[in-house]
Length: 171
Image (cartoon, rainbow, N blue to C red; front, side, top):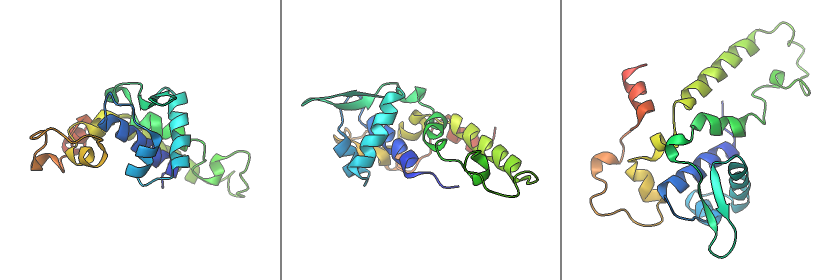
């Protein structure tokens, strides 16, 4: 499975905004920091805004920021929003499916279960899990430098949050 560029950018946009809480950021800043096309970022921002993940303000002092707290943004929900437009396999698209095996193939059932498991795992992850205490991410994405002593070397590679604890310790 491979995520679409739009899904990847959606995660980057949200992480950038989370790394700059309370700050109106610009799409161009996100595009530069995330090595992405400004046009692609703008399209992703528009979709995230229309779904209530971002608030935007036009004009000279405009920009965008999270419309919800990072703890209230489910990564599974965001990924579904961007991934469901494209069928996982041809047999998942009733309009364009030309596979002659559709009536007898069992693979679709297993793929459906695998996709459900993938999204169930991501449903347990919030934007906060990805960003809170992630000093390495802050160093890459924050528009202003962290306060001295805010991060130490042990914070750089740590994997924090409830989802990480479950991965380490099991369900």
